[in-house]
Length: 336
Image (cartoon, rainbow, N blue to C red):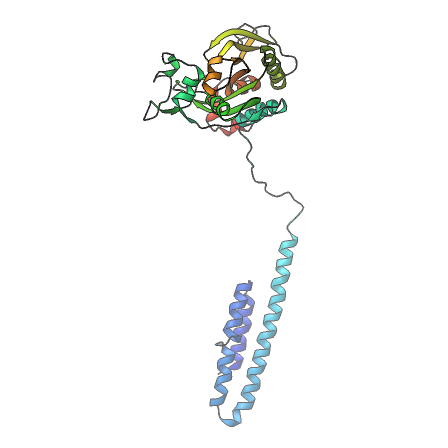
């Protein structure tokens, strides 16, 4: 075998190598267990005895040359890598990943619950599938009440037993049946009503129910608690008023308004030129509700209130369409 021709071939091959992978393949081709040097070494035994020594020396010289070429090539490839790394400015800021954040409704729920937590209320959640008893009967809502009609409530297959809750008030029944006074609770959660979807209505929305029961609770306690809440949400400068209303589960009952945060009670399109914005309903818990849960209304009294989270968020942030909360438009959500 022509050793000189092999050397010329090796010199040409080593020049064309430009990666560590190619250099590894080159090493195996010539120095591996089945490589060219191993084949030449095995062939020495087949040569005439007078040629073996000289041919063996040539093979060893070829092996040394290959090792030297590989070592030199490794150094070159290493310096090229170092140069490429040196061209990278590691002080430049990296490509940041876009991080998500809490939905504006979740932020509003958390803010409301945190306010009432500071007032001593605990937070309780309940099931979205409710019994007709908890959703209506125990809350003193009679059979003939419009809200119990199939057009106003999502009844499930067995409509005499289960439904999608239409408010978070059923949790009030669940809590009072399982605990004894004194207690103060707020209940956030989703509720469902078969309303046509428009700028101010949705078939699914969020409510927060709150109630407090103890001995000697008065309407003034309700007013004081809601005033603290309203000013914490909308600012110390707002004013609040109570308007008589009717709810089956409270007596007396009242709607709660705040002075318009847009026009400062002067009258604008948002408040219908009235200067006031309705934010929630409230009242003293009805004695019949206490009887349903086993509380003695002669010993205990309490108040309850309920608000739509979407309405609070819309008033707080000046949003004019409830559908924006549910369309997953990042242009809207990124503002919060």
